[in-house]
Image (cartoon, rainbow, N blue to C red; front, side):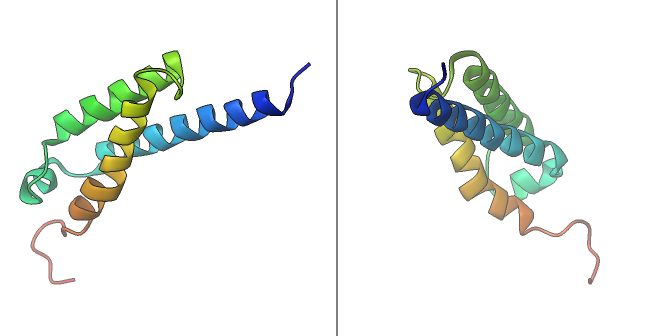
Length: 95
């Protein structure tokens, strides 16, 4: 029978996986020149980092040796890179 600890582990596992997938999808929809203009790593680099992080979390879980760096990579993208890239406007429109 499933206990409370199993429920907590599942919430942590799927929550961190959702976080990393959110970071990956956000990196996919942002324009590539915005990453360079913001002074961050390139779009393919962040796609690789967040994609590998998602695979690691799916395969091993967040409590593994590689799980914590995978979660940290997604948090760095969402907290540092996403606001910088999102703040840049597309094109040269005055809107």
